[in-house]
Amino acid sequence: MSNDSDFELAPDQWEALRTLRNPPSNGRLSKPYLVASLVELGLVVINDGVPAMTPAGRKVLVRGSCRLLDLVA
Image (cartoon, rainbow, N blue to C red; front, top):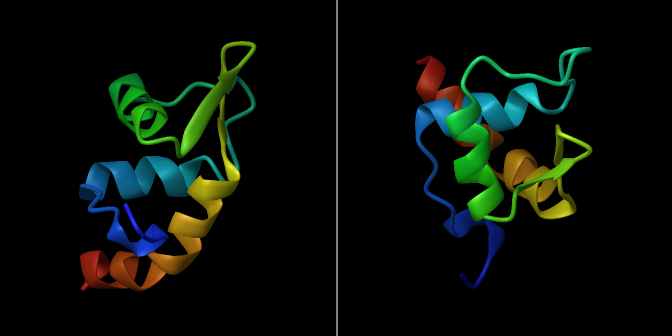
């Protein structure tokens, strides 16, 4: 992909990525399959069993935040 805005994430994936900005204290999300899909895209890594957003994931989240507004509307 040529730039970070090329990611076409599903609404659930956007929500999971947004949730990883402030992960739960136990490091678990309610839908682990979403984390796996974000790991495949290089947006999330697993460190000691805890998902963490990568720098690329942060860029995608910031650049895609206007899409999140569309999901709310």
